[in-house]
Length: 220
Image (cartoon, rainbow, N blue to C red; front, side, top):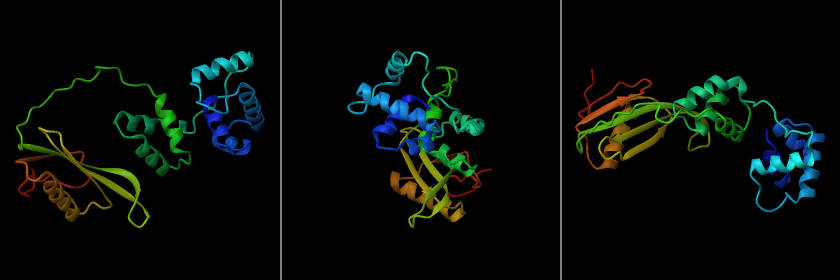
């Protein structure tokens, strides 16, 4: 945890106890930084960047390093790195680690992701595949974790995505089951949204549904 996060919570009116519970830093240490921030005039106006805060902290306390602790996500590092590498969003990663017992905040997830090593630019080769207008649509249907339904109940959810290969226009919808009736209805609504039916459907990353072409026959 960095000094900027502590100051952000101090400025938000959180007590030393609340900050201690949130970030795991000793309350005496929090009180010390609260008093320091007040003396430095850091409790109002724009919050300084972390580099500037650490510089000023070092000037005030030469023997003290900014407070740090191991991330609460460390036990889930392998899962987080895998999902992050697959391009999964921070919100969905948070939902997935919650399923594994994680009780931390979504903010901790975003801070953890911020420090993960980013892939080297140009490390993956990309081949552009050209398709004529109306020739093809790509369909992806995958599990995304838990979402709230219309009644506010927390349920397992899946995301359906159809993308037109030529224009890259897309249709996205979240559902709470994987029934074949739902699968077909998702296609019907996507076709209605696009105002037409492509000649071919290409499926990818399907959990349990088989691919179907635009005429409704099973793909072999």
